[in-house]
Length: 302
Image (cartoon, rainbow, N blue to C red; front, side):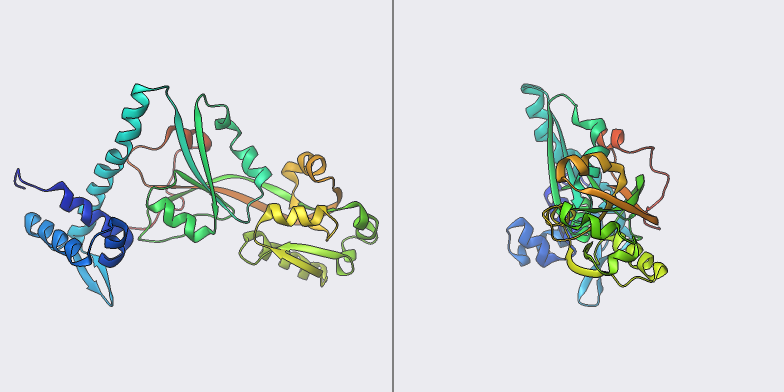
Protein backbone atom coordinates (compact mmCIF):
# COMPACT_ATOMS: atom_id res chain seq x y z
CA UNK A 1 0.00 0.00 0.00
CA UNK A 2 1.34 3.41 -0.95
CA UNK A 3 1.90 6.21 1.49
CA UNK A 4 -0.78 8.12 -0.39
CA UNK A 5 -3.47 5.65 0.73
CA UNK A 6 -6.67 7.66 1.21
CA UNK A 7 -8.58 6.92 4.41
CA UNK A 8 -11.54 8.92 3.13
CA UNK A 9 -11.98 6.31 0.41
CA UNK A 10 -11.88 3.62 3.09
CA UNK A 11 -14.52 5.48 5.06
CA UNK A 12 -16.86 5.64 2.04
CA UNK A 13 -16.36 1.90 1.50
CA UNK A 14 -17.10 1.22 5.19
CA UNK A 15 -20.37 3.17 5.06
CA UNK A 16 -21.45 1.47 1.82
CA UNK A 17 -20.68 -1.97 3.28
CA UNK A 18 -22.55 -1.21 6.52
CA UNK A 19 -25.57 0.24 4.72
CA UNK A 20 -25.70 -2.65 2.24
CA UNK A 21 -25.39 -0.70 -1.01
CA UNK A 22 -24.02 2.39 -2.74
CA UNK A 23 -27.36 4.22 -2.86
CA UNK A 24 -28.05 3.82 0.87
CA UNK A 25 -24.43 4.63 1.67
CA UNK A 26 -24.62 7.80 -0.41
CA UNK A 27 -27.83 8.78 1.36
CA UNK A 28 -26.19 8.38 4.77
CA UNK A 29 -23.17 10.38 3.62
CA UNK A 30 -25.32 13.08 2.00
CA UNK A 31 -23.44 12.67 -1.28
CA UNK A 32 -24.25 11.79 -4.88
CA UNK A 33 -24.34 8.08 -5.70
CA UNK A 34 -21.86 8.53 -8.56
CA UNK A 35 -19.40 10.33 -6.27
CA UNK A 36 -19.47 7.57 -3.66
CA UNK A 37 -19.21 4.86 -6.32
CA UNK A 38 -16.15 6.58 -7.81
CA UNK A 39 -14.47 6.85 -4.40
CA UNK A 40 -15.02 3.14 -3.69
CA UNK A 41 -13.59 2.20 -7.10
CA UNK A 42 -10.59 4.38 -6.34
CA UNK A 43 -10.03 2.42 -3.12
CA UNK A 44 -10.20 -0.84 -5.06
CA UNK A 45 -7.59 0.56 -7.45
CA UNK A 46 -5.33 1.56 -4.55
CA UNK A 47 -5.64 -1.88 -2.92
CA UNK A 48 -5.47 -3.84 -6.14
CA UNK A 49 -8.53 -5.99 -5.37
CA UNK A 50 -12.26 -5.87 -6.02
CA UNK A 51 -14.14 -5.31 -2.75
CA UNK A 52 -17.70 -5.86 -4.00
CA UNK A 53 -19.33 -8.33 -6.37
CA UNK A 54 -22.84 -8.40 -7.88
CA UNK A 55 -25.47 -10.37 -5.93
CA UNK A 56 -28.71 -10.07 -7.85
CA UNK A 57 -29.75 -6.44 -7.67
CA UNK A 58 -27.52 -5.85 -4.68
CA UNK A 59 -23.81 -5.91 -3.90
CA UNK A 60 -21.99 -8.45 -1.76
CA UNK A 61 -18.51 -8.29 -0.28
CA UNK A 62 -15.73 -10.31 -1.86
CA UNK A 63 -13.26 -12.15 0.36
CA UNK A 64 -10.97 -9.13 0.05
CA UNK A 65 -13.91 -6.87 0.89
CA UNK A 66 -14.68 -8.82 4.05
CA UNK A 67 -11.06 -8.51 5.16
CA UNK A 68 -11.10 -4.78 4.42
CA UNK A 69 -14.35 -4.34 6.35
CA UNK A 70 -12.92 -6.04 9.45
CA UNK A 71 -9.99 -3.63 9.49
CA UNK A 72 -12.21 -0.63 8.72
CA UNK A 73 -14.48 -1.57 11.63
CA UNK A 74 -11.60 -1.28 14.08
CA UNK A 75 -10.27 1.93 12.55
CA UNK A 76 -13.57 3.81 12.51
CA UNK A 77 -14.88 2.48 15.81
CA UNK A 78 -11.81 4.01 17.41
CA UNK A 79 -12.18 7.12 15.25
CA UNK A 80 -15.83 7.63 16.22
CA UNK A 81 -14.89 7.37 19.88
CA UNK A 82 -12.14 10.01 19.54
CA UNK A 83 -14.33 13.16 19.99
CA UNK A 84 -15.86 11.80 23.20
CA UNK A 85 -12.45 10.77 24.53
CA UNK A 86 -10.99 14.22 23.84
CA UNK A 87 -14.07 16.00 25.21
CA UNK A 88 -14.10 13.94 28.37
CA UNK A 89 -10.39 14.49 28.89
CA UNK A 90 -10.96 18.25 29.06
CA UNK A 91 -14.18 18.21 31.11
CA UNK A 92 -15.72 16.26 33.93
CA UNK A 93 -15.43 12.55 33.11
CA UNK A 94 -18.63 10.81 32.00
CA UNK A 95 -19.59 7.32 30.98
CA UNK A 96 -22.01 7.04 28.08
CA UNK A 97 -24.10 3.94 27.49
CA UNK A 98 -26.63 3.43 24.69
CA UNK A 99 -29.01 0.51 25.25
CA UNK A 100 -31.73 -0.79 22.94
CA UNK A 101 -34.78 -2.37 24.57
CA UNK A 102 -37.31 -4.59 22.81
CA UNK A 103 -40.89 -3.29 22.80
CA UNK A 104 -42.22 -6.45 24.43
CA UNK A 105 -39.71 -6.59 27.28
CA UNK A 106 -41.02 -5.82 30.81
CA UNK A 107 -39.55 -2.44 31.71
CA UNK A 108 -39.44 -3.22 35.43
CA UNK A 109 -37.31 -6.26 34.57
CA UNK A 110 -35.00 -4.13 32.40
CA UNK A 111 -34.50 -1.73 35.30
CA UNK A 112 -33.58 -4.62 37.58
CA UNK A 113 -31.19 -6.16 35.02
CA UNK A 114 -29.39 -2.82 34.71
CA UNK A 115 -29.01 -2.19 38.45
CA UNK A 116 -25.29 -3.02 38.37
CA UNK A 117 -24.50 0.05 36.22
CA UNK A 118 -27.11 2.61 37.27
CA UNK A 119 -24.96 3.94 40.14
CA UNK A 120 -21.95 4.55 37.88
CA UNK A 121 -20.59 8.06 38.56
CA UNK A 122 -21.38 10.55 35.76
CA UNK A 123 -23.37 7.96 33.83
CA UNK A 124 -25.06 9.28 30.67
CA UNK A 125 -27.62 6.61 29.78
CA UNK A 126 -29.58 6.59 26.52
CA UNK A 127 -32.36 4.00 26.20
CA UNK A 128 -33.97 3.35 22.82
CA UNK A 129 -37.11 1.24 22.51
CA UNK A 130 -37.89 -0.36 19.16
CA UNK A 131 -38.72 -3.56 17.32
CA UNK A 132 -36.17 -6.38 17.58
CA UNK A 133 -34.87 -6.20 13.98
CA UNK A 134 -34.50 -2.41 14.09
CA UNK A 135 -32.47 -2.64 17.29
CA UNK A 136 -30.15 -5.26 15.79
CA UNK A 137 -29.56 -3.02 12.78
CA UNK A 138 -28.56 -0.13 15.05
CA UNK A 139 -26.37 -2.46 17.09
CA UNK A 140 -24.59 -3.67 13.95
CA UNK A 141 -23.93 -0.04 12.99
CA UNK A 142 -22.58 0.59 16.53
CA UNK A 143 -25.28 3.13 17.30
CA UNK A 144 -26.06 1.01 20.36
CA UNK A 145 -23.72 -0.61 22.86
CA UNK A 146 -26.14 -3.37 23.89
CA UNK A 147 -29.62 -4.70 23.10
CA UNK A 148 -31.71 -6.20 25.90
CA UNK A 149 -34.43 -8.45 24.54
CA UNK A 150 -36.56 -11.54 25.07
CA UNK A 151 -34.83 -13.77 22.54
CA UNK A 152 -31.27 -14.87 21.69
CA UNK A 153 -29.16 -13.43 18.90
CA UNK A 154 -30.21 -14.79 15.48
CA UNK A 155 -27.75 -16.73 13.31
CA UNK A 156 -26.84 -14.25 10.58
CA UNK A 157 -23.61 -14.24 8.61
CA UNK A 158 -23.94 -10.52 7.95
CA UNK A 159 -24.19 -9.56 11.63
CA UNK A 160 -21.43 -10.48 14.07
CA UNK A 161 -23.44 -10.68 17.26
CA UNK A 162 -23.06 -12.36 20.63
CA UNK A 163 -26.01 -13.45 22.76
CA UNK A 164 -25.78 -13.61 26.55
CA UNK A 165 -28.43 -15.07 28.85
CA UNK A 166 -29.23 -12.45 31.51
CA UNK A 167 -31.84 -14.41 33.43
CA UNK A 168 -35.35 -15.79 33.41
CA UNK A 169 -38.53 -15.55 35.45
CA UNK A 170 -41.66 -17.56 36.15
CA UNK A 171 -44.84 -15.98 34.81
CA UNK A 172 -48.06 -15.37 36.76
CA UNK A 173 -51.45 -13.82 36.11
CA UNK A 174 -52.41 -10.50 37.71
CA UNK A 175 -55.78 -8.76 37.90
CA UNK A 176 -57.19 -5.34 38.80
CA UNK A 177 -59.62 -5.23 41.73
CA UNK A 178 -62.74 -5.26 39.52
CA UNK A 179 -61.76 -8.60 37.92
CA UNK A 180 -59.92 -10.28 40.78
CA UNK A 181 -62.76 -12.36 42.21
CA UNK A 182 -63.91 -13.62 38.81
CA UNK A 183 -60.34 -14.46 37.78
CA UNK A 184 -59.71 -16.46 40.95
CA UNK A 185 -62.91 -18.49 40.70
CA UNK A 186 -61.93 -21.73 38.98
CA UNK A 187 -58.52 -20.44 37.86
CA UNK A 188 -57.08 -21.07 35.29
CA UNK A 189 -60.31 -22.08 33.47
CA UNK A 190 -61.68 -18.69 34.53
CA UNK A 191 -59.49 -17.12 31.82
CA UNK A 192 -62.01 -18.39 29.25
CA UNK A 193 -64.62 -16.05 30.78
CA UNK A 194 -62.82 -13.08 32.28
CA UNK A 195 -61.29 -10.42 29.98
CA UNK A 196 -57.65 -11.23 29.18
CA UNK A 197 -54.84 -9.02 27.84
CA UNK A 198 -51.90 -10.63 26.02
CA UNK A 199 -48.60 -9.56 24.48
CA UNK A 200 -48.69 -9.43 20.67
CA UNK A 201 -47.34 -12.19 18.46
CA UNK A 202 -44.01 -10.29 18.18
CA UNK A 203 -43.20 -11.15 21.81
CA UNK A 204 -41.36 -14.42 22.44
CA UNK A 205 -43.59 -14.99 25.48
CA UNK A 206 -46.76 -15.08 23.38
CA UNK A 207 -46.02 -18.47 21.81
CA UNK A 208 -45.37 -20.00 25.25
CA UNK A 209 -48.66 -18.57 26.53
CA UNK A 210 -50.58 -19.90 23.53
CA UNK A 211 -49.07 -23.35 24.10
CA UNK A 212 -50.00 -23.16 27.81
CA UNK A 213 -53.62 -22.32 26.94
CA UNK A 214 -53.69 -25.29 24.57
CA UNK A 215 -52.33 -27.65 27.25
CA UNK A 216 -54.93 -26.38 29.72
CA UNK A 217 -57.73 -26.72 27.18
CA UNK A 218 -58.60 -23.02 27.55
CA UNK A 219 -59.81 -20.66 24.84
CA UNK A 220 -58.99 -17.29 26.48
CA UNK A 221 -61.37 -14.34 26.26
CA UNK A 222 -58.80 -11.98 24.71
CA UNK A 223 -59.91 -8.34 24.61
CA UNK A 224 -56.55 -6.71 23.91
CA UNK A 225 -53.07 -7.41 22.49
CA UNK A 226 -50.10 -5.10 23.05
CA UNK A 227 -46.60 -4.82 21.60
CA UNK A 228 -45.48 -2.64 24.51
CA UNK A 229 -45.43 -4.49 27.83
CA UNK A 230 -45.79 -1.33 29.94
CA UNK A 231 -48.88 -0.34 27.95
CA UNK A 232 -50.36 -3.81 28.53
CA UNK A 233 -49.91 -3.47 32.29
CA UNK A 234 -51.31 0.07 32.32
CA UNK A 235 -54.51 -0.97 30.54
CA UNK A 236 -54.79 -4.07 32.73
CA UNK A 237 -54.29 -2.13 35.95
CA UNK A 238 -57.03 0.29 34.91
CA UNK A 239 -59.60 -2.51 34.70
CA UNK A 240 -59.49 -3.70 31.10
CA UNK A 241 -58.32 -7.26 31.77
CA UNK A 242 -56.25 -9.87 33.53
CA UNK A 243 -52.68 -10.07 32.22
CA UNK A 244 -49.49 -12.18 32.49
CA UNK A 245 -46.28 -10.76 33.92
CA UNK A 246 -42.86 -11.88 35.15
CA UNK A 247 -42.94 -12.82 38.84
CA UNK A 248 -39.37 -11.56 39.15
CA UNK A 249 -40.84 -8.11 39.75
CA UNK A 250 -43.91 -9.22 41.73
CA UNK A 251 -43.54 -6.64 44.51
CA UNK A 252 -43.01 -3.78 42.09
CA UNK A 253 -46.06 -4.84 40.06
CA UNK A 254 -48.29 -4.80 43.12
CA UNK A 255 -47.02 -1.47 44.44
CA UNK A 256 -46.80 0.40 41.12
CA UNK A 257 -49.90 -0.89 39.34
CA UNK A 258 -52.12 -1.77 42.29
CA UNK A 259 -52.99 -5.19 40.86
CA UNK A 260 -53.39 -8.53 42.66
CA UNK A 261 -51.78 -11.91 42.07
CA UNK A 262 -54.23 -14.48 40.67
CA UNK A 263 -52.13 -17.58 40.05
CA UNK A 264 -49.02 -19.03 38.46
CA UNK A 265 -48.81 -19.77 34.76
CA UNK A 266 -47.30 -23.19 35.48
CA UNK A 267 -44.51 -24.27 33.16
CA UNK A 268 -44.17 -20.88 31.43
CA UNK A 269 -41.08 -18.74 31.87
CA UNK A 270 -39.90 -15.50 30.32
CA UNK A 271 -36.24 -15.28 29.25
CA UNK A 272 -34.03 -12.21 29.02
CA UNK A 273 -30.96 -11.75 26.83
CA UNK A 274 -28.27 -9.19 26.19
CA UNK A 275 -26.94 -8.97 22.62
CA UNK A 276 -23.65 -7.26 21.89
CA UNK A 277 -21.81 -6.58 18.65
CA UNK A 278 -18.35 -7.81 17.75
CA UNK A 279 -16.08 -4.95 18.87
CA UNK A 280 -12.33 -4.69 19.23
CA UNK A 281 -12.84 -3.24 22.70
CA UNK A 282 -16.08 -3.95 24.60
CA UNK A 283 -17.73 -1.11 26.48
CA UNK A 284 -16.78 -1.48 30.19
CA UNK A 285 -20.40 -1.06 31.36
CA UNK A 286 -21.56 -3.71 28.91
CA UNK A 287 -18.94 -6.01 30.41
CA UNK A 288 -20.39 -5.31 33.84
CA UNK A 289 -23.96 -6.02 32.69
CA UNK A 290 -23.11 -9.33 31.08
CA UNK A 291 -22.76 -12.40 33.31
CA UNK A 292 -19.62 -13.70 31.61
CA UNK A 293 -17.40 -13.11 28.56
CA UNK A 294 -18.94 -14.23 25.25
CA UNK A 295 -18.51 -17.93 24.58
CA UNK A 296 -19.66 -17.91 20.98
CA UNK A 297 -23.32 -18.35 21.87
CA UNK A 298 -25.25 -16.40 19.30
CA UNK A 299 -22.19 -15.65 17.23
CA UNK A 300 -22.70 -15.72 13.52
CA UNK A 301 -21.13 -18.75 11.79
CA UNK A 302 -18.11 -18.14 9.63
